[in-house]
Amino acid sequence: MLTPGIVGAIARSDADPSPWNAADVHAIIRHDLAYPASVAIGDRRADDPVLAPLRRAATAKQVRSVTVAATATLVSQILADAGVPSLSYKGPALAVQSTGSFVGRGSTDVDVLIDADDCPRADAALRKAGCQSRVGYPAAPSRWERFHRPERAYTGLPVTIDLHWRVDPGPGYFATPFAELWGRRVTLDHDGLVVSTLDDVDALLVTAVHGAKERWWRWFWALDAIHQVEGLPSESWVEAARRARAAGARASMAMCLAVVAECGGAVPDAALSAGLAPSPRVRADARQWLAHASDAGQVEWSKRASWSRRRARWSMADSPLVAVDGFARAVGRLLADRRAPGAPQGSPPAR
Image (tube, rainbow, N blue to C red; front, side, top):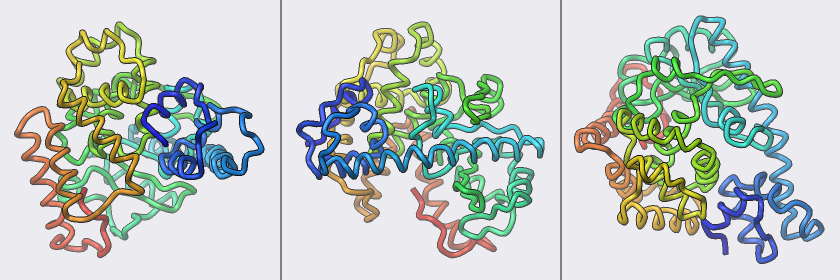
């Protein structure tokens, strides 16, 4: 049976594939762990047909990762040429930071963060490069779109571009201004991936906030968290705690540490002494969320499941005001999609 402990074993490259059956292999692939799992088990059970889908999926991720990295570099150059500062984050940039290589990071999209004021120039640059809004918006993100949503997806390049002007739909969950993130940026030049990205501390906070928003239902994010938490120097944890408080991400960071611990990762004493130790309730929630992720085949979009996710999201707010604002924006997204002039039909559901 696939358990969160398998994630930790994959992170340590000491996973034992001997008990894995076809259902386990399917779950590993579903959680986007095919490539790191394949690397972790090496040549063991090389001729076993049960593991053949895992190795095929790993190869596909390996091939796609080159395209993703190339697209991230291209988008960075497109925006730079238009005078738009941008940060490529998650995806290949995070993989290089946390593992030393983007190979196998076959992401579904390229995530790029910009200042909200730069949306018109970024939109124009992407359209000039042959891109278009995935749901058909004819112009740059409007004021209502920037208020209610944190990003817009563009197609037209080999990989979909998620252009973000906020990290999270609720700005209070990650309130760090773009200018601060840009001022702390790191430049990567690795095997053709040439981008600016978040520094290690900001990248960890984003992993924590994103994981909390999605209730950690995909264990690949937990693998990221293990690499990042275990790799962050001891002297950086005081700064991590300071930035978490300033960003409104302290609850998300505590949950991240609980997830790492539940998967068998090593949570540094420096993280706990910096004031980020998860409470017993948070540890219980982490265990419950990961168990649900193990059982669920995919995200459920029923009203009941949506309400459950919303309640879980509120629990990650550092203040009641942030929770209320997040709720208001979620309602606003529904109303905006229905009433805004020119809003296309078929917009993705509010989350």
